[in-house]
Length: 167
Image (tube, rainbow, N blue to C red; front, side, top):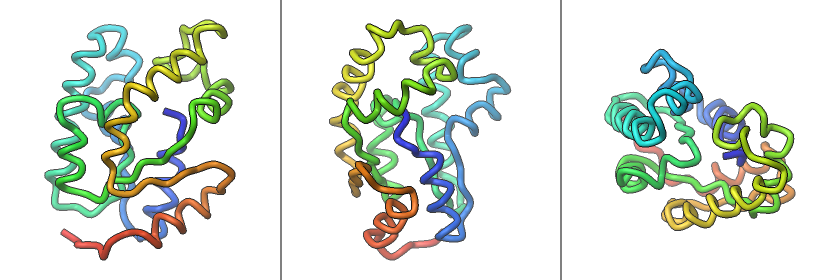
């Protein structure tokens, strides 16, 4: 959450001349509900099941695309194994401090953190990153984002992509 997956994913897809898919948006379209509504009415466990099903459907398609996952997606239902089996995965790496600074301005628009007090917010971000880092580190490519522009990040990803195997 907050690493710029959507922004970078859109730029990367444009540079590769491919479709861009944001898994959260795809899930909202499939469920005809917002992520926040799913969390509020059905809970996180049901949300993660919907997310897993949407991921499998996306990865099993015959299209070529750049896919941005939700921040928690890799940590549930062996999703990271699925992603690595079907794609070239990329971890957009940031420190807890960098994420806290970036997310502080977006806090109210994000269901996972909007309810947190200013005191609880930094601990929540650090805890989630700590819990998920093992899954993120399984990515085939890791990009440190510190002090890099979106253009620089996309160029670095493109330089390290394996030859694309188009479907």
